[in-house]
Image (tube, rainbow, N blue to C red; front, side, top):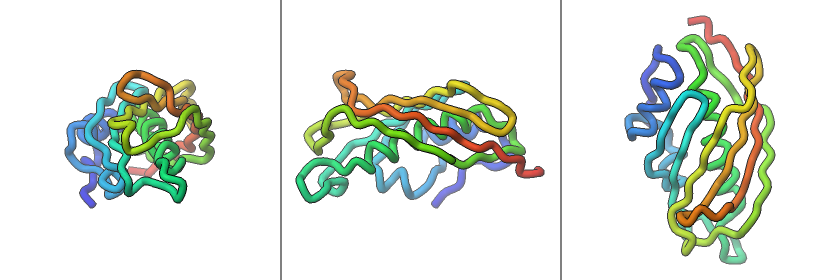
Length: 148
């Protein structure tokens, strides 16, 4: 696992992540391939494969949930100062249509709706390459001071 730049603000860290500089093993497990970060927003791409399947032959709902949680929480991450951290405290996902390995590359987008001192809320969408909605989500993150 390669850590993203420490001691920098969240937007700088998320831009580095989107550029492929650092990240976690989860990105590899999810077949994530690039993205884009802006103030209060994060876009991530992934390619569902047979390794993400469930017993009935479609991609497991956890794939969509993980992508949405990643995009929404990373959108919150873009708002952090160098001495702040966060954790997801609540995640709600609504599945709109099935995802299969034939779906191809999908895009998750997270946007911060509200950012307070201790809590932030973000909403997200997951779409296929044609822009068809696959799932939506809402996440709440708790902001913590790292005391740095």
